[in-house]
Length: 132
Image (tube, rainbow, N blue to C red):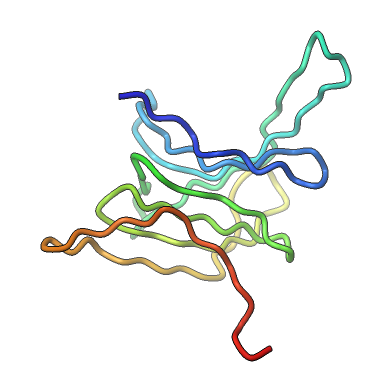
């Protein structure tokens, strides 16, 4: 079975944000949100440069979602990351650090797998509060 990153989100500045499942990493499977700058000024030599990543964790250990997941840049610049192809559905909103990785978790939700019914999440979206 071939597992690939979920669909990319092209940002207004031309960069790309993706949820990278992290399948078969040489140093261990772990998922992350990652942003790349794309330089297509030379059509014969298009390049991508990683500018930020956030490897989210579950109780201090790397979190891994074998399939499914999403990473969205919100209007306020935070990144909403959701992984659901594992025994835990986890949704994290991160205020990215100024550097190439990390950030401050401003919201986290998790749901542990139900052994009878199972649990899976395709993606999460941030919506405005009701009544506003």
